[in-house]
Image 1 (tube, rainbow, N blue to C red):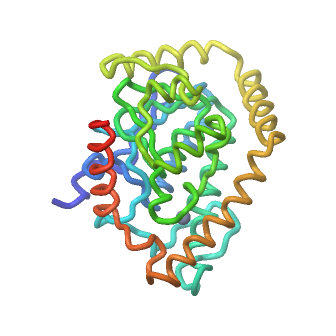
Image 2: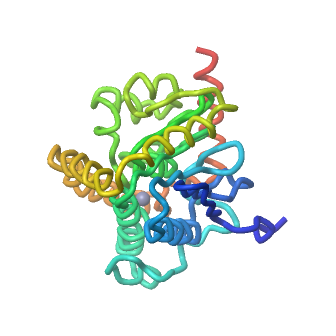
Length: 291
Ligand code: ZN
C-alpha cells in the first residue's frame, strides 16, 4: 500500500479561533520526514498569517503522536532537498559529516527553533508514543496536553548519540531526571512527565481532544499581542537560562557522534534503522513492564 493513499501528509483545520495542524502518517506512527516537515511549516505559516487564528494545536493522527524522525519508511527522504527556510546551503551533495550537519541545522534544529518562536500560542496534543524526534515536536509547543496512555522516550543513546537534535532535555525536566531519561532510554509515562512538569494536563484518551480545545479556547480569549509578548518573554527567559546556547553546544557533540558512528560502523545511526530501533524499544518496554 502506498502512502499516497493518505490524503495529505499534514492536515489543516480551523475551528473558530483555533487552528488544528495534524501530522497524518498514521501508518508510520507519524514519523517525520522532510516532506512532512515542510508541510508542517507551511501549515504553521498559514495559521500565523490568519488573523482569526489565536491558538495553534499540533496533533498526530492515529494511535501515536509521533514515533520520531523517519529513519526507515519508504518515504524516507534524507537524500532530498526541499525549498529551505534558513540560509543553509543544500546538504545533498556534501561529503562526510557536512551532509548531516547541514541537513539537521535546517530540517531539525532550525525548524524546531522556528516553530518554537511562532508568535502565537501553540499546544501539543499528545497520545501514545512521543519518541525521539517526536519529543522535539511536542517540546517546541508552549503547552502540552497528553492522554494518560502517552509516553515520552529518547532512546538515541543506544546509537551512541547524546539526545535528539533539539536538546531541551535539561529544560523540560530536572537535570538528574534528564540523565535517567537518557541513560536508561526508557519510556517515561505521562504521569511521571506530569510530575516533573513536562506536561500541563493529563487526561483520559477520550477526553484528550475536548480538554485541549477547552484550554485553547480559554487562551484565545486573551489579546493577541499580550499572548505574543508573554510567549516571547518566557522564551527569552529560557534562553537567558542557557537553553539556546546549550542546544548549540549539544548539536556539536551530536554531530561528533554521527561522524564517529560513520567512521566506526559505516553508518551515521550506528546501524539502527526504524525497524531495529522499534524492536529494541519494544523489548525494553516489555522488560520495563516486568520490573
Ligand atoms: Zn542527528
